[in-house]
Length: 379
Ligand SMILES: *Cc1c(COP(=O)(O)O)cnc(C)c1O
Image 1 (cartoon, rainbow, N blue to C red):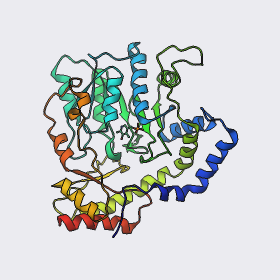
Image 2: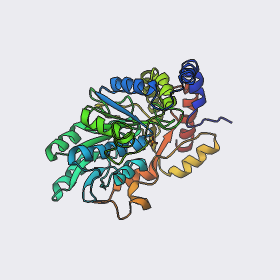
Image 3: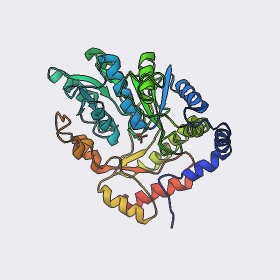
Image 4: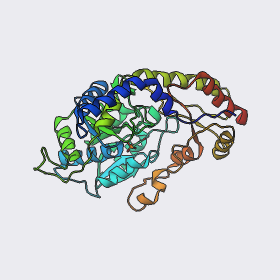
C-alpha cells in the first residue's frame, strides 16, 4: 500500500543537511544561545526578503501577533492594551491564534464572513460592518490563508478611509505577494510563523514581526525582552519572547531555498488542478489574478468530506482539514466576540474543505497517487 504523509520533514532535512549541520555546528562553537548573531542576521535577511525596513524575531507566530497588536496599542493609543470596546475585524476561518491574540491584546474580535472562492476575508463584509454603526473598530487583521493574499487594495483603502491599522497574519504565506508587494510589507505590520510545517519552518517554534515603522519595531523589540531597551529599565509589561539562536541558524540555512521551494509548490498545485478539475464534484482552489499564491496548503472542496478523508486514510493518503471549527464556534470566544451576521460561507467551508499533501520535494508519482486516490472516490 502507498503511504503518503501530509509532510515529510526528514526528506527536507536530508536535502539541506550540509547547510543546516554547518549552521548548528557554528552555534555549538560560539555558544551564544540567547540573541546570538544568527538572530540579527535572520532579521536582516527576512527584512530584505519581505521588503520591509524592520523585522523582530520572536518565539512563535502567536507571540508575533500578540506583540504586534500590543505594540500597535502602545504606538497609536499610548496604552499598553486595547480596551474591550476596541473592535478588531478578522476572519473566523483561521487558526485559533489569530483570534486569541486579539483577546490577549485586550480588544474584541469581530468575525466577518469569507469570500467562498478564496476562503479569505471578504472586504464587502468588512465594509458592511464599518458603515453599519457608529464604529468602534480600530483595526483589521487579514489572514493570507493557505498561502494566498487577501484583497489588499480594498482592505487598505477601507483602513485609510476609517483610519484603522492593518496587521497582516502572514503565518501561511511567507514569500507570497499581492500584486508587486510582498505580504507582510503592506499593512501597518505583518507577522510570520516558523512553525515546522510552514513554508519557512524551523526545528521548533519561531516567529517574526515585520514593519516599516521604526517606532513600532522598537516597541515590539522591547516587549520581546521584558519591556525595556536594556536589562534594568522595563517600561512596559513585556515578555520573554526571544527567537532562539539555534532556530535562527536553522532558518538562515533554510531561507536560501525558500523562493525555489515556493515555486515548486506552485508547480505541484498547477498539476493537481490540471488533474482534479476534470472531476466534477471536486472544487479546486481559485487563484486570484493579483496574488502570487505560495500554496502553504492545496485545499479542495468535496461533498461528504469526512467520508472522503476516512477513505483516503484507508488508502494510505493523509489529508488535513483547515479548519473544521471556525473561531466563533469555539468556547473561548463565546461572549467575547462579535458576529455581525450568519457566517454562511465560513460554516460551509468548514464542512467541505480538505487539504491535500503538498510540499516542495514531493514527487510527481506521489502527487498523482493522491490525485487519483481522490478521483477514484468521487469520479
Ligand atoms: C500557524 C499560524 C499561526 C500561529 O503560529 P505559531 O508559530 O504556531 O504560533 C497564526 N496564524 C495562522 C494563520 C497560522 O497558520
